[in-house]
Image (cartoon, rainbow, N blue to C red):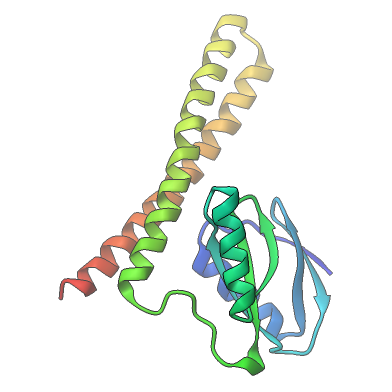
Length: 172
């Protein structure tokens, strides 16, 4: 079964994947908002999502550590990784304390901030091309890239909000 969904929130995406597996559908593949599921036993897995290290060695170590911990890499899209563990093996939570959750959200925020900075440059280049040529194609792509920029800002803002909430709890 295939489903198309856009998620801008890791926690909401995790919740949905766990709801899907509780209905008997395990994630098999993901690409650009298209999730492919295969039948499984309802509740067979528990899903978590994380951001892998950007270096090849770091990613390899991350995957080896997960495998050694009985956690399967169900799917990977760039550094975004979908992890699952057999529910019979007990609970599955990657980040069990607020400090480690803050660090995770900081990594996610920084990742999307880098993408956003590149996107800002692209928007200005597209805007310049649209102005110089008067082309509707460049104008249309400028609008599309601008909308993507807004989505990235929303993701970054949401991560920052979660960081601040967790830090409030840490600081009492």
